[in-house]
Amino acid sequence: MLTGKKAVIFDMDGSLVDSMWIWPEVDRIYMGKYNLTPPDTFHKDIEGRSYTETAQYFVETFSGLNRTVEQVMQEWRDMTIHLYATKVFPKPGAVEFLESMRRSGVKLGIATSNNREIAEAALKAQNLSGFFDSVRTSCEVAAGKPAPDVYLKVAGDLSVAPEDCLVFEDVPNGILAGKNAGMEVCAVDDPFSKPDEEEKKRLADYFIHDFYEIRDNTYERCGRR
Image 1 (cartoon, one colour):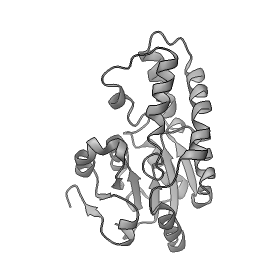
Image 2 (tube, helix red, strand yellow):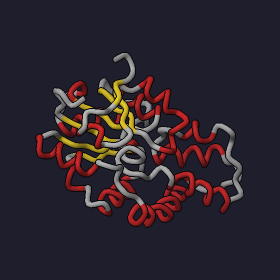
Image 3 (cartoon, one colour):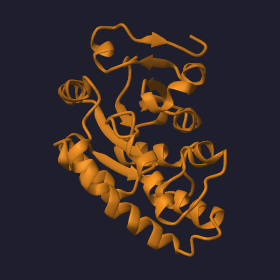
Image 4 (tube, one colour):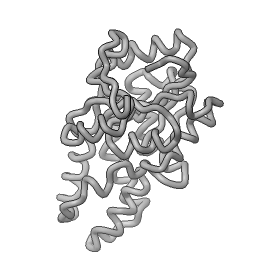
């Protein structure tokens, strides 16, 4: 998996840290607050969207919301930063893997659909900030995942060609973003995306349940391999 790789780029939520549970809870509380009823396609509609794009979706989809995109994002930030700082933890083996990559001279980056303030708060709370040479959000590029923009932005920061990057992602649209960027992608197991596991394996190059499987060489080869 790591042969020839000069950089490893992580999606954050559900890939590096166990945090996907936060957003359904935030959605539940937020929609309850404003008496909003989500469409049946809600979760698929917002998968991979940037923080800003998701707020825009809320404003456009829920006619009774009467909030601006900026107001929606601020309310979400207020609700989530404390949770990220106190109830979110790295995936099993993730810290050891980061330490191993640092020792090997591999550059490390974050390409997240989350808000920068929240991403930085989450990384700081877990003492992970110092590992990363670049942290970028989909809000900083033209389009969110599955567009490749945020991954290409991080690769540019790291001065590493896309084909020399390995991506870790937990949802299909994120995997597609990495593949669309011309990178190899390792899908990461996560309870939130368990229903999509077969699709994840079909789209990705590799699949892991935890980061110890990389150390032990027990990860699964997927896709066309």
